[in-house]
Length: 119
Image (tube, rainbow, N blue to C red):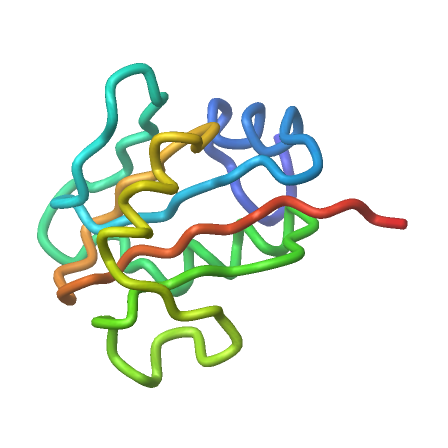
């Protein structure tokens, strides 16, 4: 058993298998999942788990070179992220390696992480 970090076996497998430029989406439960894109559904009730701590846990496991959030998301929502129109963000989900659903109940609470390399 791991002493810390993420413990979800499938999510860990997907993160370990991610290559440079692969997209990992962390989303609220309402984001549509395109056909053929794997989903790891962590939501177990409204608000649980929250999005931000999960994104930080993923960032501790994966080299992330870029973040995208919707223009419509709150201004305080990952201020380092590139802001794009929500429709464009939904278009990116078609290319995602995985969409991880959270219980986050904030409108437009979706983050696209682009995998980087450690060198």
